Image (tube, rainbow, N blue to C red):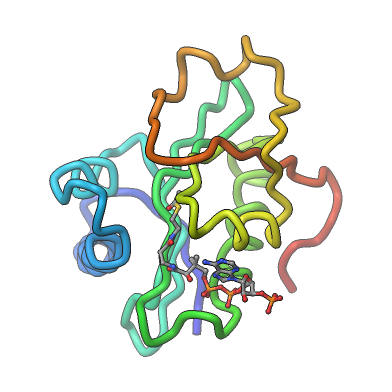
Length: 162
Ligand code: ACO
């Protein structure tokens, strides 16, 4: 089992994993237009943290880091159907936080959570209260009325992964 964080860099193996992740998102997020999923997963300004087991993608999180604003927007998050509720979603989020802090230099995440995923995000430390000053994120993330805006502050020191 391994966790990787990468973007569309033209490397064959990475492309295969990103396509696998795109397929998981398309199936697990049926309300999202498939073209929109493909566009963001393949967009070079987005990154994806993925769980890989036996060279197969089990799930992942696609996000866009806004380095100048020090926050990231989570676009999609999903684990393949038969591997949900086994802890992968939590481990994935911890890898994302570690990478975002140590590599991207981010302090916060924002996401529009689906109603049914709010419980998962709360368990990952997200809140419905947005503490981040509006001028740090307004105009950067697109308004989307299919979900609830949630925020997570990344601890500056905590080791999120072992
Ligand atoms: N609602 C409430 N609690 C949940 C949910 C949920 N939908 N999913 C998981 N949890 C809980 C688990 O019970 C667990 O609680 P515990 O720590 O008390 O045992 C905790 O959250 C973590 O569970 P994991 O096993 O780590 O989560 P999992 O691997 O299943 O991943 C995920 C969670 C990503 C939500 C997965 O269930 C999934 O892919 N769901 C379908 C797609 C989806 O809804 N994605 C999010 C949409 S919003 C967005 O993409 C921005």
